[in-house]
Amino acid sequence: MQAEPRLLLQDFVNEPHNYVGVLRAIANDARTQGEIATFSGLAQGHVSQYLSILQDAGFVERRVPVTQAERSRLGRYHIVDPYLRFYYRFLASRQSQLALGIQEQSLAEIKRHLRDFIGANTWEELCREWLLRASAQQAVPVLVDQVGGAWWRIAWTRAAQARPERSRRMDVVGVNSMAKTLALGECKWGPEPSGRSVLTELVEKTAEVVPNQGQWQVSYLGFARAGWTDASHAFAQEIASAPPTGKNWRALDMRLLDLTQVDRDLAAWVG
Image 1 (cartoon, helix red, strand yellow):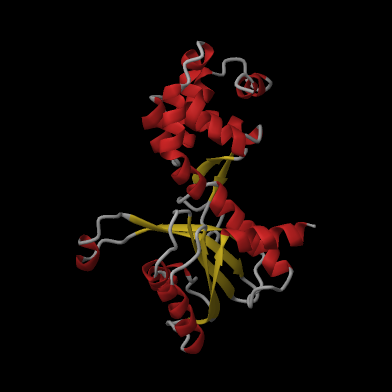
Image 2: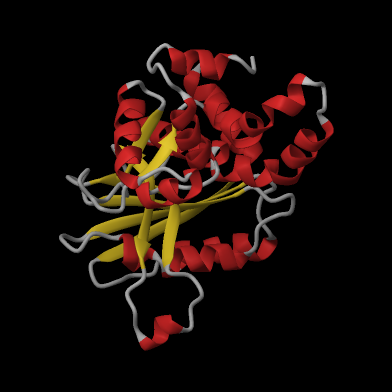
């Protein structure tokens, strides 16, 4: 199993070393060409060439915010296959140790970071799949035909100056441009029920995601492995009884799900 990723690469390239560096960079959250070049130590022009080949081979894909065009400058690179993503994050740099049977350091690293790794990758992807299938089953109040995420840079203002982050993101975004409908969601993989603040921030970010053209209907989704607090459920009821509105959008509802519900629904829909 440990040799398989390198063997797969050798089917497409003669000298896989630099490609391994690019894949390791992406697996360690370097998403742009500049970040990948910095992490790997490769020239940015070479990184562009390697990424093109990795995309053609199906190892890597370039994602853009789902509400933007493919040519968006906000594109980010991701490893497509879940196993390769795990391998290049945790195992690729420890081949010498593993070959000697020295496993403790690798296991400690995996245990330390696995929760965040699952939350930022597998869990978000499952939640996006849930939304796409729920829409096909008419199990959500809005129909969407594209599902992904959204991220954007924060324009400098005096108000934004106090914010530590330079960009913001939304984990799940489903859109139907013809029907002018959006589904917006956040995903949490913590061991405790998620609180109301996650949902209030989700609502606050709505205006930053809704496209400027047209009048939009918005449905909110909260995905949390361990479920939601009583205060969170109360907030969802408030949204249903007094839906918020914006300049060119209005909310319809808010639905909260946990891992058990997501798993049950996907099992039923996939059949």
